[in-house]
Amino acid sequence: MSLNGSTTSTESSTIEERQNNSGDSWFHGVLQRQDAEELLPKHGNFLLRASEVHGKMSMILSVRYDGKLHNFGVNSDAIGNFWFEGTHREKTVEQLLQWHITNGIPITKISGVKLGAPISKPDWIIDHESVIFIKKLGEGAFGEVSLAECEIGGQKVEVAVKTMRCQMTRETRAAFMKEARLMRKYSHPHIVRIIGLAVHAHPLMIVMEMCPREFSG
Image (cartoon, rainbow, N blue to C red):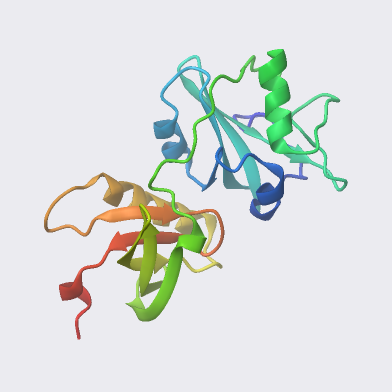
């Protein structure tokens, strides 16, 4: 059901489950609503993301429809079925979304929201596997800062990585993502540039260009 005031099933798919059950190019990892809204410019655009709902990390479908961002929890059960409402189930989230697209069925009757074109992951969302840690440089408010290598455009680049502690609260996670969102928008010679975010698993990571002067000594 829609997260905009309606109830959701207590059985929702987790980040780990999505790796086997969703279209990977549509899944954007742990994203805040503000980030999802920026990525969905047109009517019918949609993406999948993870967000904490009632203390549990859940799969969320975000859709731009009639000028608004609509968010729906993806329900699941113990035998691997996925659905939004009603009796129709599918074995993967991707199959469920394709069924709604092919048949023109709204995600929920009350919302009337129908799916258009999916939005793939932007370049600034980085796979965890692309980041190779070299050594710890220090600690920040949210977690550790490390020297690492990151594969970008087929080349390995030396980067600084800020990781978020896994035991962080929802509020702290939101603050971490807000910091990343703000830093990503800045382009200034005296401000460290954000290369991207790794948000598909824990720990969440902000990948930044390496600034030798800041970490020397």
